[in-house]
Picture 1 (cartoon, rainbow, N blue to C red):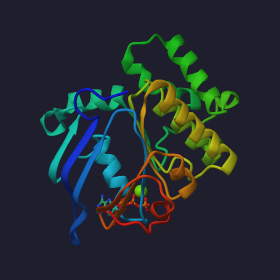
Picture 2: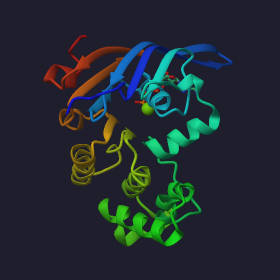
Picture 3: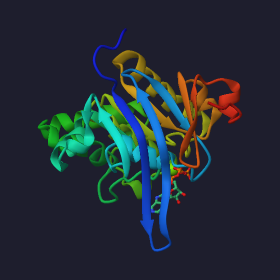
Length: 243
Ligand SMILES: Nc1ncnc2c1ncn2[C@@H]1O[C@H](COP(=O)(O)OP(=O)(O)OP(=O)(O)O)[C@@H](O)[C@H]1O
Ligand SMILES: [Mg+2]
């Protein structure tokens, strides 16, 4: 399938500064990244290298200090808060490093929540949420609160929630970090199926070379800079490949 039109994501010269009492910290510097629709890619790099910062910018939760970010050809800097909220709500599924589940809602309520704004009637939202929970192996935990679930189960609820509105872009920050290897393989299989069958673009942050190995592209970040962008070769997975 040849991609007509603009790339799904295009970051050019992106820098991100965090200001604190200790001064300004530059978490990203000179990041150029183009992602086409239908890609399945991994972002790797040491702790503190800027991976979550980059994901927050790609997910329109934060904006670059310098540089530009175009989503499907639109400069995100030109979008107002409501347009950004719509893009996040309808176009992007985000699985956070900390799961960010609402503690007062059941697993089902958490998964159904993003659909509240989509106009689906409650019964359909709940049926769809139940089906999503079943797809991550939690059909029997729909009524449990997050505090009653294990870390890996909470992570799977967060994955089901990210899929609620059928996003075209799935951003997952360490989605298998809290899972046993069997569940991790199942979740990865779910992402692969979404990518292969529905054309969902998938970007996964991972420390695990075995997760990155199944993707088509690895981007390595160190000290806020991209220093490898290419196929998941052994050297790339082990962090020995240079750009
Ligand atoms: N809100 C903030 N204010 C100040 N500094 C921040 C803030 N958020 C992140 N940083 C700093 O920016 C750098 C990049 O952080 P980021 O969370 O992107 O790292 P990461 O690659 O996701 O790491 P990990 O693998 O541990 O999750 C770190 O040095 C961090 O301390
Ligand atoms: Mg992180």
